[in-house]
Amino acid sequence: MKVAVLAVQGAFIEHQKKLENLGVSCIELRKKDDLEENFDGLILPGGESTVQGKLLKELGMYPLLKEKIVCGMPVLATCAGLILLAEKLTNDQHVYFGTLPVKVKRNAYGRQLGSFHTEQEMKGIGKVPMTFIRAPYIEEVGDGVEILSSVKGKIVAVKCGVQYGMAFHPELDRDNRIHEMFLDTVRNSS
Ligand code: GLN
Image (cartoon, rainbow, N blue to C red; front, side, top):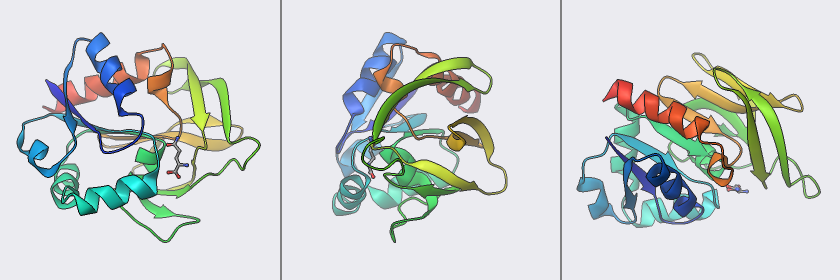
C-alpha cells in the first residue's frame, strides 16, 4: 500500500511523518510527473486553499488528480484540503475538486477563535484531539454524507464513500487513530 501526499504547499510533511510512523510508504506529489507513480490513497493537507488550488492548475496536476478522486481513490482532506474537496463554498466563488457534497465556510471561526485546540468524539473512534488553525467548518451536507464529528454545534468531520473531510489538523497531534481509520479504508478499497 502506498499513499500520496499533495506537497505543493502547506502542512504536508506532518502527514508524511504520520504515515512513516505507521509504517506506510508514501510519496510526495509536487509536480505532474509524480502522478505517474502508482498509489492507493491521497492526502490533501492543510495550508492555503487558494494557493494550493492555483498551483494544482498551473502545474497541470488538477485534471489527473480529479479523475483519480472521481474514479474512487480514497482521500483524506484536512482543513484547506477539505476546502479543495468541497462541492460548494459559502464565502468564496471557487470550486476546486468539488467531489465532496458539502457546503464549507472558509475561515469560519473569525479572527479571535481562528485557532484553537479541543477534544471531541469522532464516530467509530472515540474522543480525539483536534487542532483548528484558521479553520473552515461544514455548513451543510448532501446525500450520502455521514457526519463523523461536530464541535460547538458545527460539523467538523465527514465521510462520503471513501472521501474523508476534516476541518482540523489530525496530523499535528500525537493521536494516530484518524490516519489509521483512513488507512483501513485505503486497505479495504485497494
Ligand atoms: N484558512 C485556510 C484556507 O482558507 C485553511 C487553513 C488551514 O488549512 N489551516 O485555505
